[in-house]
Length: 358
Ligand code: ADP
Ligand code: MG
Image 1 (cartoon, rainbow, N blue to C red):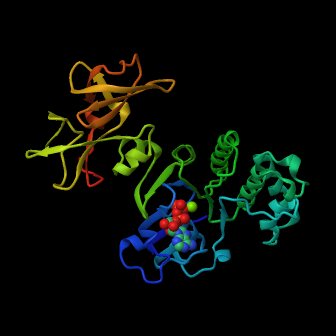
Image 2: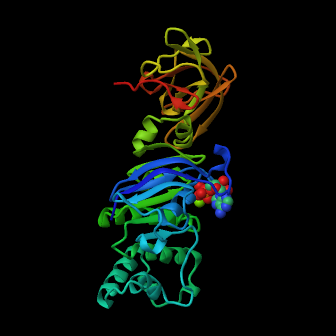
């Protein structure tokens, strides 16, 4: 196991990159601490697989270095890096049995037969594939093939890091939840560093202690699930995480550090930083209240999502979403929107521009 450091990392798939738009990874500086459970979360195309392939050595970065426990491994071949990588689609040997597939990474390294049998039994129990051990992999369903592929990633106990690149894509929805909890359980048991790549916030938030959020080749925030929810550093995080995501309201900024929305002053979590740029007020639907006073709005839509209702109300040209626990208003009704102060912040050109409430 090791701490993994990415230092000044940039990558372009082009031979002669010009502007930042030519880079799949723009500038990454990141430490993955030994034993951490990380998720790498971001939309399709933001550079997640590129980053994993650079860590595992399948790809050599255009610029920057990769360190394992402060040792430069940038030039080291993948098989010398001691990493297990599980891909989006199963990588197994069809002609081998499940048992042989699971044993392969250990046999390949000359591990003693008794130890191999022990590890294979342990992983098979964990993934609940014991009854399949003597079946040829060719006969497995896609779900089970991917389970075995994951098992091959987990069977060694001497790796620096186990990386999963969207491993549940081909898995049945009802099995997804189960496998995800298994991975979490496994992480707690073996304490290996794990990096789990996904574009699905639920997967990221249930698996990881720390979530690294990427957008467009850049890391926009690293934090616990609670931190990402409670204090998004960037509007992208606010919008991408949460259901529905954070409201972004056009802010009118006036001198003296005041901000208003629809002509009414809005109290922010703390003092404003910086000046100029595009300013938006960020407030999660959970913290928008409907009351007697506040910004006037008309209810456009009410959706009952079980435990609460999502109310969409229009204030001037802006749609605002509120999560309402009790009786919701009716469509067409006039409501007044309130914003909980310690959860209301200003964003400037996407980045948070208020000091945190103390
Ligand atoms: P993600 O895994 O987050 O979906 P990728 O790392 O696969 O994103 O891709 C990041 C960007 O790099 C995308 O714009 C993608 O089109 C591009 N890209 C990925 N692989 C290659 C490749 N082999 N050659 C050229 N461009 C690539
Ligand atoms: Mg990918």
